[in-house]
Length: 326
Ligand SMILES: Cc1cc2nc3c(=O)[nH]c(=O)nc-3n(C[C@H](O)[C@H](O)[C@H](O)COP(=O)(O)OP(=O)(O)OC[C@H]3O[C@@H](n4cnc5c(N)ncnc54)[C@H](O)[C@@H]3O)c2cc1C
Ligand code: SF4
Image (cartoon, rainbow, N blue to C red; front, side, top):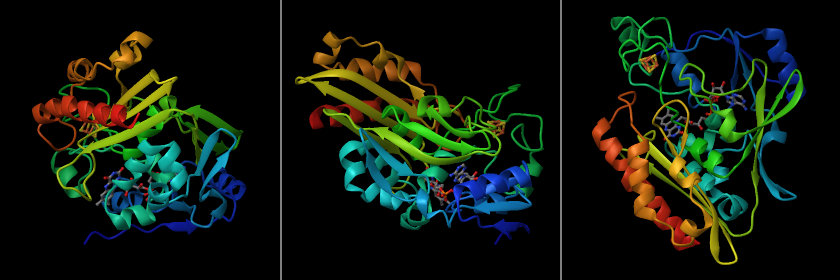
């Protein structure tokens, strides 16, 4: 069993106290929510913070509540609670479905929405012990200067492997961050950035406090995930779809595909559809377009040719389910 390195735990009782602590401790400190990803990563030597700021006492960041025309989900809400929330299932179904398929039951009971949205990217050459990585000379993302996925690559392309990311983008959600400069709101689509070494726009000293999901009449959304086993495994590919209907016909469609590279990808072909196309949703055409647009990398496990073919299958499945629900 791999031991945890030594570190000091801080347990602030309020968001203000947490922000002040982060400012005082500096960039060497890391936030801990459920710890289901951070602690295994620390055991593998991927992070070695001298100080860990636990958010466990921040009860104000737990829960799903309706505020006007938005669903506000606190960052410390467990994935289990998101998956089981009647409000989330009704107004943010893709998010509830995504939360329901993260890891196994224990991960979902400890793991939080904030921790999932801020999850480190994953790569078959990175999520390994220090000994394993050292044998390969490490890599660009940590301690080395080579990328083993893209020969000669100068940018890390580790994969966004958090199930809720694609759903948050498809649902046009807003990420709420609190830091030394106050509160900052970012569309989920801008929160994730295409850099596997650090794939969120979260600034030093900020913590994610909530996700705001707009509530819209006539909206349906679904989430599909590809993984080897029906539980525990991270996504090898994932697809979130949002379909907005008005007066009986589709008005807008968003298809977000993830676990390809560091940033979930919005299907361009879906964004370009006009009202006429949406009237009779061209599911096969969109699935074919997704197959052309998406090129999985050998960054996570799973044969790339299989993962690419499964883009078409998953997009078709998700669109079929969304249209039947609508
Ligand atoms: C065996 C196994 C299987 C797993 N399978 C999946 C899976 O299928 N899908 C999946 O998505 N994940 C999976 N995970 C990863 C993890 O369990 C989940 O992503 C979980 O949601 C992480 O949440 P957490 O609260 O435990 O985060 P933590 O581990 O506490 O933190 C994760 C990261 O987010 C940062 N962070 C946490 N909260 C905040 C905040 N409020 N503001 C800013 N930064 C924050 C931490 O500093 C850390 O970098 C798996 C993990 C294991 C060990
Ligand atoms: S994509 Fe390249 S740089 Fe990034 S973690 Fe994998 S091997 Fe390292």
